[in-house]
Length: 243
Image 1 (cartoon, one colour):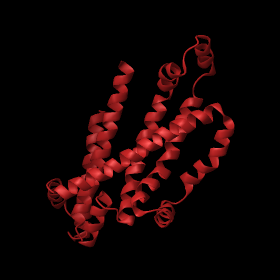
Image 2: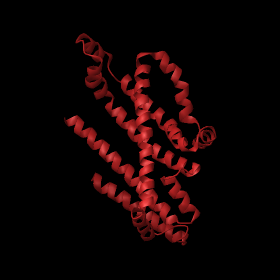
Image 3: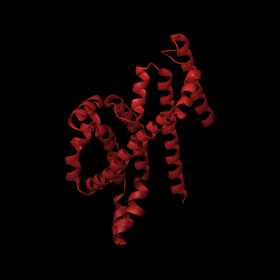
Image 4: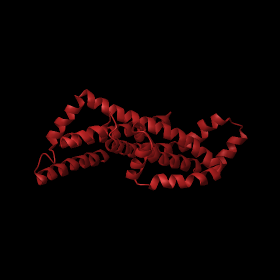
């Protein structure tokens, strides 16, 4: 039943797309499904387009990796030293509420354009990962920690057998949220800052040349890639739980 509902939902998207295409009645502004599929094959047949997509996902991977590592360290410190959490709280609120456009423009002025996409993406996804990990740590029953201390476990064994198993669902949720947001942020940052070799640059070039079928094709690729990564992460989490 679940698969049928998902399939019907995807089908409804294409139906709405086709109806809007008929209503607009201008293939230059609203490309057809057929034109978009052809643009999709052209993108995968273009070496420059494939390299641009790879550059964007590498940038995103670097940003998530750095954000996750720093979020783990600061969340662990905040969990054990509450004054650190109090100190960091205004920064987390600021990062979560400041408008994205403001972040992009301010960062673009202050740092070199080649670093702008990394810094912007980090500022957007770091608070999500930090809060997710901290919530997971706060969910640990204090009795578990007391029992583990009585067993005189080492610091690294406590991370492996106590902290990580309990916080893993929170980390997974934070990762998936940061993945979706990070992908949108990094593409927008590439678009505004005109970063070289990126999906944002592809979208900008397609917009200038009025190739809206290519913009739709790129959007489909982004959605499919995000869905694929999300599926792989969930499958990995299930394998870990079964092990």
